Image (cartoon, rainbow, N blue to C red):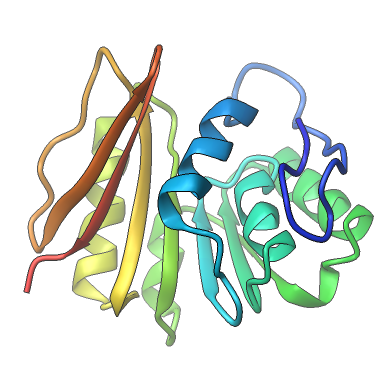
Length: 180
């Protein structure tokens, strides 16, 4: 697993041990950023179910101002901290240790939110999008990237409209904006 582009391009990142974390493949990550574009200057990013933190670090490498990383796994949080240190992004990362309910206490909104829970937990997709909606965590022109298992799919989310959807074998990406 590595940083695909930006000022940390090629940097190898550590992944949490075990099968609890499923890192986003380089192919999927590269495709996501091709869809989103290349200008992330001064963007504020939230990486939910961040695992290794690779997606948020990719945003930082491409110019994002700050990235918040949320995971409830002790191992994942330790790896995120190591990866931020290795990438020299400790000052640009905010680590949140806990479940998605922790997002309710945030008093900010984000340009980009990456949602990548365990593929078999459809409830976490719904809960994440509900919290984003209820607590207005997405900026007016922001985008939510949802990574999911192609064969399982995801539901429609109240308050959002799907603007793009791409399949990459067993993994799919769906990009959402406000439906206002």
